[in-house]
Image (cartoon, rainbow, N blue to C red; front, side, top):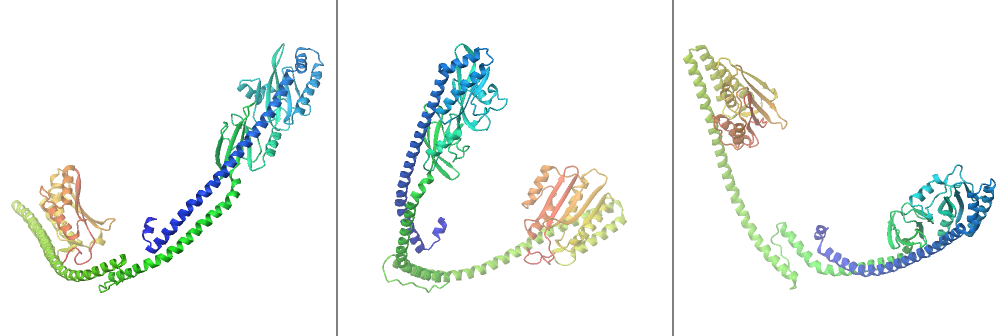
Length: 609
């Protein structure tokens, strides 16, 4: 973003900055106005939510107190207690029917006292009594019910208020809020319970009627179990979003923002929670939002128009100066820009004119210097070419007498042994070897000619060592017409004989010569022997010396010359490397590029053989 701004024209920068400043100033005032309105509306909504939760909690508290008061009045009254005591302590076979009639009268009295009461059930060890308008479930046993288990888990209080649940006692699976009251009868020590089911649907209806706006209401206990709700909110979603302590909080759910107000009932562990949707304020805020947007756009348009008018007058002289500069960059050093006013642009124009005049003089002098440097560069290049030719010829000439000296020593040794036939064969092979050597005047030959030289050399060495040396070739015939420097393979074979197989106690001395193409399409020439091998430290030292083209000690004269000539001729990425396992084998690997030309590109001119 910053780079894009910097690349903009000056005129666009002025316009953009003017518009941005105008939008920022008007935006600050507009947003401040909008936030004040939004804050006032939210405060009003919060006050309404707190008032509503307080009113509902007080009403629910009064209703619950009324129900509990009537229940305690009933269970402590002499008529009720006397009726139950006579039934539990008496032995009259007609006592149950008489007690059911009297208890049902008490139940009807309780139900008529408050429409929230759905049904009543009385449990005694000797028999149960219930509202005759409802039908108990077959086989229901209060002491085995979830309600009784929950009652016991909560310490078995005298009065226990459960949460919203399906009616366990009566048929119909209505949702009720059970109240469990333990009844104490004088002279009787068994467990007697009165269960009053508050109709959850009636409580939900009351909550729905209490709401005149877009609020949602739920009633929960201290364990956040649902008691009642107006059914307008996901009762599972609220559980993790509210606390049971009375307070005002906020809740964002499904892109809806709520103000949450909670109030506790004084007579119970129930909590009334009101969720006021802030979207109720949207209609009131929309008009303010449109006004804010209009003011911001209007200020941006006005600022843009004024900045465009003044930027054109400011930028036009600079654009003309820019056109003059572009002409200079294309080589027109006669260009001048005249400006009649002595301001920043006028001083810049005079500096520009002076700079162009000096730059034209400098360019003319520079062109003369470049022509002189070109001549000097050609002279240096010619001298380097001659030096390179002399180095390669000197290195190649060092190998020739070394090989001839070794071969003549072999002939002298055979003469001392009186082996005239071997001397004749050896002389013939030597003649053929030098026939390839002196053929032509080029420093490069085909790989096939180099192989023929090596074959003659191996034939000479085999005569010398009494056929104890065996050799074989693995050649890629498609590569035989590629070019290679003269006498690079024979020194490697010689090294394999004198420092490899002759240093081993093996009766059979094997040498193999391979030529193949690697994955990079380079030509690889390999000479392998089954001789004494090279110790790891010595092998590492040899390869390090070959990589930096330093002299290899311990009779490494031949391989040093081969490696140096290859690198000088083809480049540092080519050359010689050794692999070996001490006591088992050694392998010399030579890599060169594929060339079918008369001379590889690294040579400036042909090298004499």
